[in-house]
Length: 449
Image 1 (cartoon, rainbow, N blue to C red):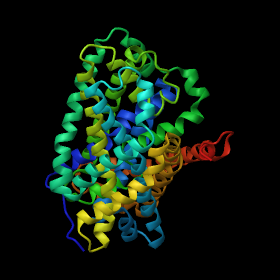
Image 2 (cartoon, one colour):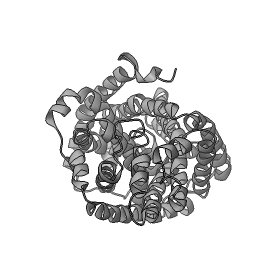
Image 3 (cartoon, rainbow, N blue to C red):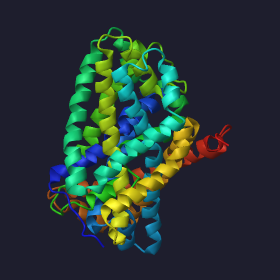
């Protein structure tokens, strides 16, 4: 088997983890889910989920990876009995499933960068989205985006992923801040801020059962939990690293970028977005594309702003897609004597084939996304936190505190938070998600059939 790589620096690990988290989950999914799940009411539930469930769960994945120095499947196998490998396998499958349609959206972004350069979407943004989001062109764009991802992962941890994310993550943050400042100068931007930042208590109460699964699922998606990413990345980390501080850095940075994304996207959606309806299909999966494209087409230097905006989205999409592909490559690299470049290409081909339905028809993309949010992610996180909290227990605390002297009290609070708060919250989320997916009228699972 090939020799296992490590991060060259601790900063490299933190930036790679942030790069995984700060992706389309923030710049596409967050506005998409917020727009279709009650606006600011969704944001409240999401923020609660990030800090009460997401942060402790992330530390659980860090513990598993660093303790074993192995991929997700082998990590569960080494620390638990054989059946627990199923939990690792589910996490790997979940990441693979998500990346299959994530690449499709990455292809959309590439088409929108070109559309910004030549102004192709200015005349009719809705028609442009319909043309680029499905069909043969979308299949080709998906392949191009995936080829870029495969190329970076094939170069390895230090020369590929670490070097790429050291450039991409600071670029995302700087450009997002600049865009947020620009949007704040637009007339009427206050309407977008109100939708994003002013929760309605009655909406929160009346729609909690529908909002909570998507809010918690968004926390998992945007923090890259339940996909084996953080287990994989932390398996390349040294035992003297402070996992608590590293995890806190990832969560805070990711959340700030998510808020920045809202501060950029919603004023555009509700002001210069040409009156786009953010609750329609084009305002759902296509909200980031249709409304912002309409906005850029109506202002001076719109092409320049379009290139910058969709350039940021591309960098974010790429950083997350790299981490998702690395999960499967890591497992194969740990278990088979096959060069990393060959593994990356082979897995990339399989991803392309699974992604074809989502590229051909956006209805299938929505179906894949619903399965991920309402079933795969919460189930994967549930198995992980049950294992860490109730099987590893004290061993997990010891691993967390390695390199984090002086945090003994935090370790005790953390393990009981995992055992009670996180497990309870994820169980509730999973139950609500299964209800929405299978049991209600017009259940999402049966929509494409």
